[in-house]
Image 1 (cartoon, one colour):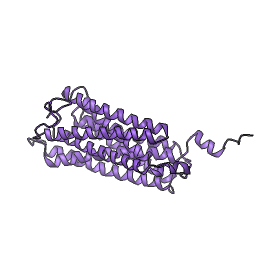
Image 2 (cartoon, helix red, strand yellow):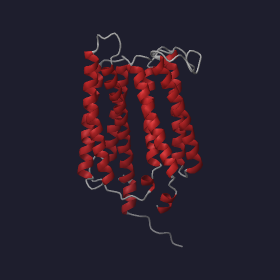
Image 3 (cartoon, one colour):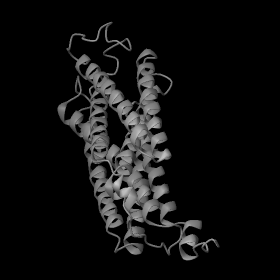
Image 4 (tube, helix red, strand yellow):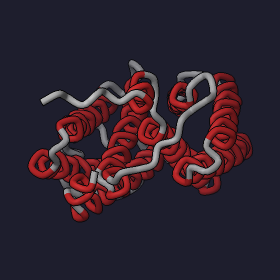
Length: 308
């Protein structure tokens, strides 16, 4: 494994982190568009009122800024994919970089269709959910290019059932389903009820995941850190959800979106993205640090040396 550590590319890893941070900025910009009801402030696409520099007034400020940040993130992702393809020897990482490019292109197209189809046919929800998937992908690339991931790491056996990988995958799936419910509620496609049920489900699976990590891997530093991070982010997100819903009710009669509602809703949306990213990170760490199935059997019963 020492060879893998030597092939660690510090500049590439830092650039991947930078792309992930820019993607988070893009999610903030998208949440501002929705919360300020500015989704149709610009009626055309890909240009804005037929120009790259429309008058920055009213909702155009949010919508056009979102488009510009999206374009920058798209270009940064292409550079990341090319860099990975030229310098990373792991084929699966190179293909994941290309998948990130495909996701960001599809995200741009969905954003355009959302405008051209006047927010119909579930396009806003699909646009929001694909954005979360793209964010999870770049978070993964930032982790995969780190020195830590490429180092020789101590692995810990899992003696519980179901496996920690299955629990972590279930948690990530429930979190993503809650992302879908949240997007559908924000875009007025469903009532608040599925989102409330989803919040309870996320809380339940997160507690289960955290307890499993604590009981089975108390001495595994990285998994323990991931447990604390996941638990903390979900706790903050739960409180933000209550605040965001209260702000909607309290300002329902206002003639325009009020700052308190916009602030709480945007923060709730962005922390939701961080919750999904943490859930994905926990899944990846579980697969990296805990042998599973045949892999565990191979570690206990290594293949005999070949006879020369």
